[in-house]
Length: 391
Image (tube, rainbow, N blue to C red; front, side, top):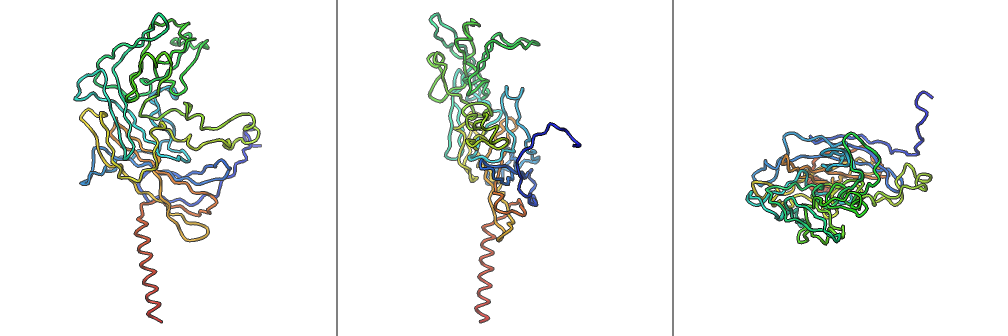
């Protein structure tokens, strides 16, 4: 064989690829995926970027002058998987709900005056989320094994980042610069390995630390206190994307055991849940928005509240089928990224079509198919009138 001899034979059969035409200026891509039943389906994804600082006379955001490319791989602020996830690849095959992601979000104290604690909130249509932030503070160990929390320091801004939320990772011996021995203890909070406050007893006995950093991001109306520290249980609160291997997301990826390896590889496990591809926290996943929903952000900008209607790119597919007349299919908005550093809104739209539909060609555009239907109905009516008049 003229090639490597260590390749594995993968019994995966792709569908015939349709001709694809993009009539828009937006970055878009076609690809295929298999469902849990091993049936292929077509996927079209588009990414449209809007500028929060530019709006038309009706207050609708204008497309950004520079459209960002599709994101091909997950992006982190630092070390992959062990730093804050900014956004994931746009090449998810299907998301059953829409992710609302607030990237690079920072809580600004009211009027810019440093405070020990204050609330912030965001709203998109009928969905709303509130949380509370605090200045830096410590958890101090008591003699009887409990914890005492210091009063927070005053702060003017607090990043809404998972390293400041409940969670964490504890190693012993602690990682040393330039030296990476296998640690005797390596434990982490599965819902947020990046956070703070996590302190298992096994690690405390070895480390003998007197205090550790306490979480600075709290669930609204549920302050983090000594009881939560002692129970080692508290909600992970944030506004950004969560890691692929964090719980409860990881549980949706299905079971990859010996039975899967022998019977299913390389197909998806039978218990795979496509909700795994949703990367927002569970409480930031909403039904696909239609566009026009009111967006309100309170406490996320130093100059005050931000308000605008959610953009709708209005992208649609025109499907040319092997049998039947062409059909329109709307693209669903399944990801909205509010980039608070660049003041941009990214709307990712996606559509899936079963390969069994027999798609010969796909066109992507912004047609007004309601108007097209009206024109077609009027055309049919005129033809009928002529036929009747001719009789």
